[in-house]
Image (cartoon, rainbow, N blue to C red):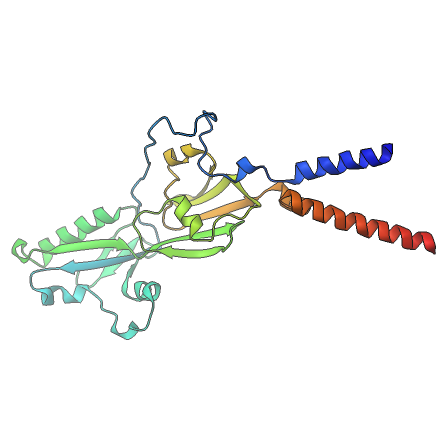
Length: 266
């Protein structure tokens, strides 16, 4: 009887320790005041403008009163009419080379490395008015990244490279576009690997804390990599929920008991 009680206690401990706590699966918790469901302080979103890096693709369009005058600056990609948006952006866009330059018809090479799209826009507009047109031409330049590209990896439903045609994407939108984090993913320590001119840096974010909205990594940037680490429960292999753990343990005990009985009969 004592051995049975010890076995039950051991199994109970295994079930409890192997299950993933409910609080570890909930996003945006108010951890400073767990008794209050409301957020007492207004959270300010931190969003710094993106600065162009090598291998980025820029979509540049020039408009004027007489559109024919600026048609040379606006590739139309007639040879790629059957291509999707990403492919057309690749063929029609201006790629930043290893020296940080883009090559624009007539204007030649323009260094854009480290500038924001708004700064590049003003730069091209000023250069056009100075070298090619007068102010009466009413030149209007737009510069955008050819899609916000990022990578998700680890414990997400659909890992891989994603491209969203938006100016701002927060980390929850990015993960949702990858099918969300699976149950065995560690939401408390998500890695954001970000590109900088001097190299890559790894940043840690806690998606279960509402204060993530105050983080400079709440909004993802072009070329970010989001890696979701697995919880320790996954490596144990007993199951993420109580039902899965009990099922696994019953299977193991059944196998051990059957093996013991077969050996005992020999």
